[in-house]
Structures are given as C-alpha cells and as structure tokens.
Length: 252
Image 1 (cartoon, helix red, strand yellow):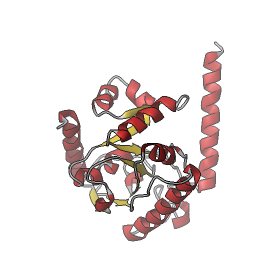
Image 2 (cartoon, rainbow, N blue to C red):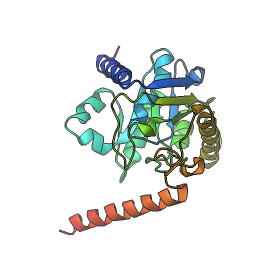
Image 3 (tube, rainbow, N blue to C red):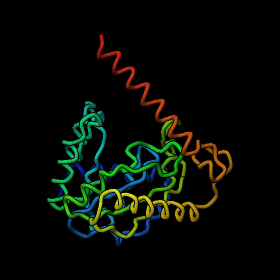
Image 4 (cartoon, rainbow, N blue to C red):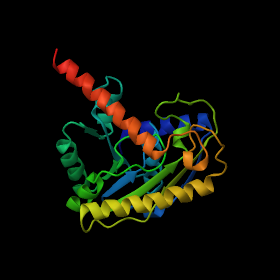
C-alpha cells in the first residue's frame, strides 16, 4: 500500500470524471503483472504521464515511477508530492544520476516511465528517440513496454491553453507487445520507434474525426499543428534562446 500514490490516483480519477474524459485502453495484458518494465511513452501533452499509468493500474494496481524534469521536483508544491510518489528527477544538464536511479528502480522490479522523445512533440508526430530507454532496459534486463497515447494534447499541450473543464474528450491508450532488452541500444531504439509509430497510426485511425484546421490535429491529417520539420526548428530555436539566457545569467 502507498497511501499518497493511492490518494493521487483517486484524485486524478475524480478529475477525469468531472472532465467527462472517455478512455479507451487496449493492450493491458502486455504490462507485466509483476517485475520490472520500461514504460516508453509518446509525449504530446503535459498530462501524458497521468494517463500512461492507467494500464499498469488496471494490471493488478501496479504503479509507474516516472522520470520527470528536475524543475517539477524543485517546486514547493509539486516537489514533495513527486518525491512521495517515488518518481525520478531528471536534470537535463547532468542526466547520469537520473539514469542510474532508473536502472536501480528497474533492478528492484519497478515499472519506470520514460519519454524517449524527451520533450513534447509540437507536431504530435513521433520525434526522433533518445536511446536512454533502450540502454536502461538492456542494463537492467527489463523489457520495454511501448505505450502510445492519442488525444491527450487536446487537454493541455505546449503553446495552447489548458482545457480542464467538462470537455468529454476521448483519449486512446494502446500498449504494445513488450520488446525484449537485447541487442544494440540504437537498433532497439529504432525498433521501439517503429512499433510506436505503427500503434500511433492505429489509434489515430480508430479515434474518429480529426477536424480540419484544429490545433491538436497533425498537419498530415489536415490540422494546424506544425509539421515535424517545422516543430523541430521551433524546438531548436527555443533551446538556443534558453542557452543564451543561461549564458547571460552566468556572465553577470
């Protein structure tokens, strides 16, 4: 029993009920009933991690320890909660410590949630993957559990206001068959990207209407979201701006 985590889950479910969110979850049987697993998740919105834990909860009320940026842990409100839930802080300027912590969690039989894209995809297509998920799976011997979410970007995503009222949005979650932690990390990462890309297309096809011009709809489907190439350029410009601001602060 983990009272804090159980309380947070209950609060989240009440919020989803109030929002009228309609979840369609498939592939729960691919989440291991016990033992470790690297839960690899696509990243389209700020609340992805709350939805990504649903399949594990349905599979024997298991809990996922998510890797999240350090700034969330530094916040005086969210920080104590994140630590109580045993999530893993990630310092993007020095990721070795968070990587080691994740591997230790996996060796203890935990489920660890990872975003291979590292940051939110503004295009809602899959970005290039980092190899961290594959490397920690191979080192720990834990399988990778590819998990794809579609529709979460409608609730709250980068560059758009949050919509936490009673929207009734459908959200699809699909868990793919586990990938064994074998071979070269780059090859395993490429396989993970391939599997998750196929699942994303499957969920999109079954989702229903994707209205033309909507912000949450990929350009490929007629939406106003930037293309993957445009989104990558926007990300690069944002990173350069942040680096310049850090350099300016350091030189003061």
